Length: 244
Image (cartoon, rainbow, N blue to C red; front, side, top):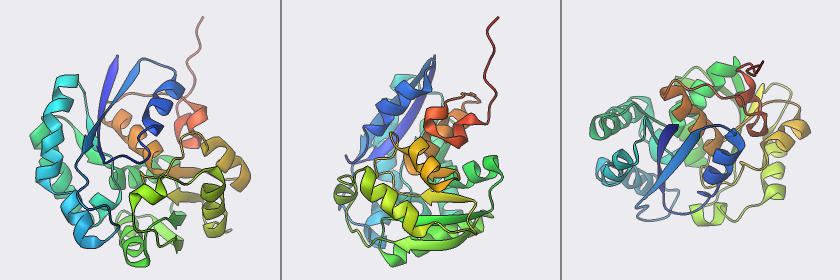
């Protein structure tokens, strides 16, 4: 059994995690601990507070008790808002606090793009313009070029969590273009786990979503390889094991 830990802010799309656990179809357990979101606002000052060491540390002890082998801060905006170096410091502090390998969703997007050999992406963000621009700058610092960025101007994670498949597909289609090798949907408050294969079929290219890459990143930290095509192209990089 591989146990993986996630610090998830508040309550929006956390039901993606049991769904993904089921879709992994192997002995992988995804343990989610909810951190205090504070003010639910896609605003820089609120996001900096949401990702503060005090809020992350508060959830770490519970994860350690779960037997997790790695921990990921399952929040994109609450990590990239610190900038590349600040987000690295956030992850280092989390690793020290947890005594485990650690990462965040923002770095997960960069590592997932590297895994797929993707350099140019279209970003469909639920955030306001200024926050979406910070995510684009973070990707660029990681060597991933956002060729188009679309901001939806949604202020709260609670509202994002109400979006269904039609809204997610509309956002992905609106931002996609011929220059993009993949489409990136960065908000962990967005329900996507049930939709990734269909989104990829509709767009004809890989789609990277926040909760998807967060789980993939935790598996990477634990040095665990899983082939799970129901979670999209990212989870088909490993060959299927042939049972004789």
